[in-house]
Amino acid sequence: MTLDRRTFLAATVGAVALQAAGRAQAPQQVSPVPTPRDWSRLEPIAYPDPDIIALDPRFRQYIVANTPIRRHHIGTLWAEGPAWNGVGRFLVWSDIPNNVQMRWIEDDARVTTFRNPSGYSNGNTFDYEGRQLSCEHGGRRVARYEPNGTVTTIAERFEAAPFDVEFSGGRFRVKGTDRAIGILELARQTPGGLDATEKFVSPQMTFPNGCHVAEVEIDPETGDCDIVSYVACDDVGNIINHQIVEGQMQGGITQGAGHILGEEAIYDRDTGQLLSGTFMDYPMPRAILVNNLRVMEHPVPTKTNPLGAKGVGEAGATGAPPAIMNAVLDALRSAGITSLDSPASAVRVWTALRAKRAAGSVAASTNTT
Image (cartoon, rainbow, N blue to C red; front, side, top):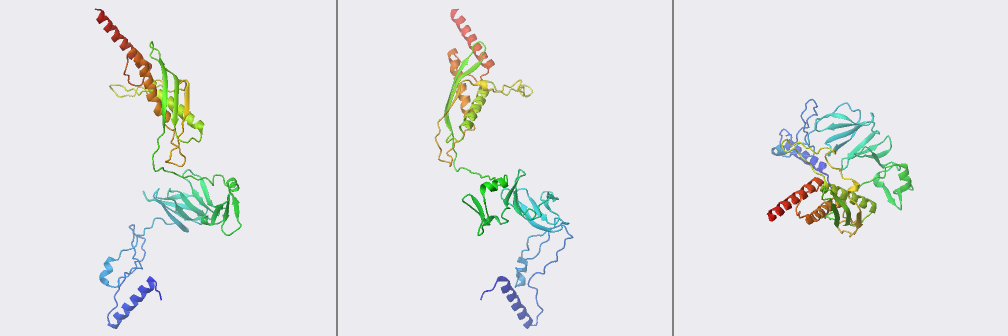
């Protein structure tokens, strides 16, 4: 013979009551009397747990009340499907006859209309990303509302629960029935309904690598630098779209060339005002900045992710600055210049060459004297 908890507690209380009556004593109250629900006050009201009974009055003080109950809203005709959104910190419920959903916001306790019409929904929940899943009787579907405003139908065509639908051989079917639909047909009938996203976080980091070589020519009369040839060979792992990789490298290398040959934020020494705040004063890198650009591939798959990819996002912009600046210094070394701060703009290069010539003229005149 087995007894559930409530039956056991009821029998125990009855035995205690009979024993007390046999001693001709007044019966003692061994459990708290439920307090009538009073909604006239604003503070939360706590109610005792009916499953907790103190057989000995001395232990009554240790009974902990249930979670406090607070009324947030009145006026809903038929409220069902309450769901708490832990991301946005608000409570949603459905008013079925009025075809709306209401929302109570934790920050300021306001109650607003959340969705109108609601499809006569009567069940709601939120997933871990804060997306609402709603059972809508009006459309006979379970819908998921995405952050971008689109709606994904979770279950509709079969009028079945999602866990009753299985997929195999390119077709969806309801378990134990002959109702089925092909994935291509379903995609045509529900545009966007099969869209899905997934996130992969690699347990280890991976790094692309490569070699960049730049050749420059400098006009000693103006200080102007021209990139006459540039070759880049990079290992970015497995490549899916070669055109995207090549375009990414071309753009990154041009951006790095602009950083070395002109881009500079100049501020007024006294006021701190930015003087190069427009493209009238700040050079914009252009495609003709790098001539004879050649991009080569040397893919070596990485073992830290299933694709074997290492990434190409900043490969060009990382390799170009040191390659081009080293080429400029190598060209200036023939004029006796071994150090120059970037950017190697025309005025900086011309100033450095002029200073070197002046120093050489002074030294020559001193030796002659």
